[in-house]
Image (cartoon, rainbow, N blue to C red; front, side, top):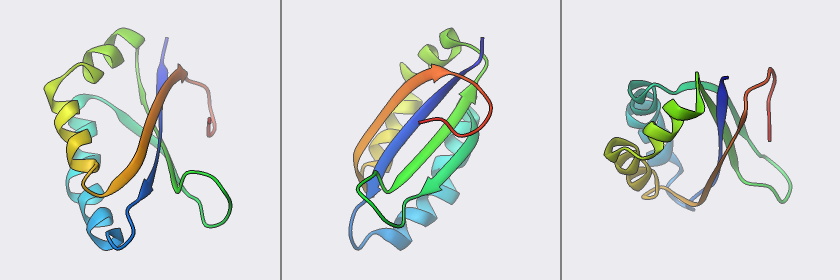
Length: 100
């Protein structure tokens, strides 16, 4: 059964340009190389919610567990944390449409 990795974070103030460059140059290619298929990304303009909400899908929970336990995943998250705060994620069964 396919699962989604739902992720949220806030961009550090003053790091917006560097953050967007990192996401395009390193984050997206990196998670795709690991086998995650990006499916949604949302930017919160107003309200008391995480600034970024994103998801990626993978074919099985076993595959996702393997990805999340990898050194490559740890390295990508450490790089992401140079640009963001309050990074959180959860795993849910995949369904169509945006999930939170």
